[in-house]
Length: 67
Image (cartoon, rainbow, N blue to C red; front, side):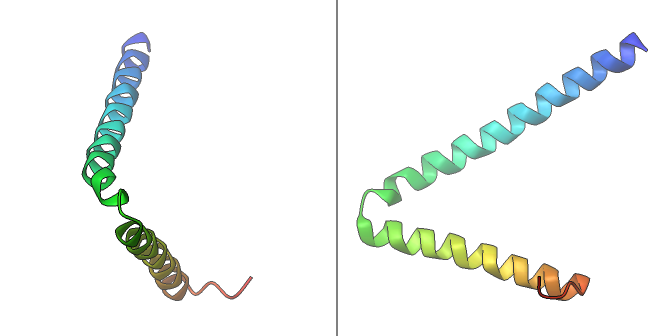
């Protein structure tokens, strides 16, 4: 049982490290784009519209009604 917990802990640390690495890589790539207000507004609009699109698509696929 101790080996299992040790492996599970290592996997969790690996998963967190990968997620943080992806976050920092994306943030480093997007940070220069946030310097100008026009590109910042466009980038935020693109992010919000993408999330709305995914949400509406999932609702349609799963058949979830309006709440």
